[in-house]
Image (cartoon, rainbow, N blue to C red):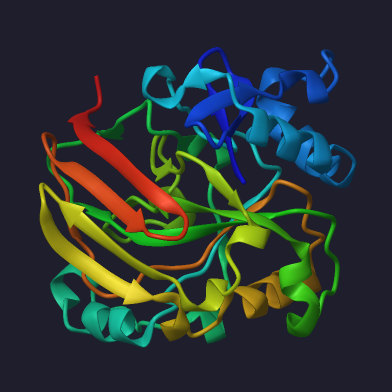
Length: 284
């Protein structure tokens, strides 16, 4: 199923008739708007049947008339894997002017970092670049949405803890500042438009995906090339900290990373998960 947040921050599911059916009544009216998706995911086992019935029945808001927002606007945690493709490591090593002669270490060493959850936006927004004298890059990734509390989970069991997957862009300021700082500006984590539930993605470790800027392909890869695959990332992070329902893990980006500037349009396509289109503007 394809789960979303639409219009006035209502929870929704994309129905078979290409309408979006409201699910907001499946969580308490006392849950803050930004926590509704967390509540839905936490209670998924109880509401899944109802969601499936509504998806089959349809009769909601036509998808073309709906405003789709970030499908998970406020996870408790937003984790990200640094340098998780060998070809991206090689690419970084060849751009010493950009990476300031730093040693380029992969996820096997660096493990991960945190991004500000306030950097998350959806397809209803734009990527806002704050300065015109610094370089900002696109990074195409898969967002893994955790489905239940996970602590010290083995890689063998890890995918049982996944709620679903969503396209994710990790926008990055190049420079010598700390990685979390450079990646946590408002609007620097676009996701969506849907979370596709894990049952519809039988092999997340073999997903094709690609990214274009203004129609020109810049990145193309497959999650089979990840240094730390999705299951391994869950194992590594849950060994240190308890993952919460709704948490997001960004898998890392392959080679082809490049600069974006105001006026660009970035499109990330993951055939089994969805397509995210984001315009780039100068921060107002």
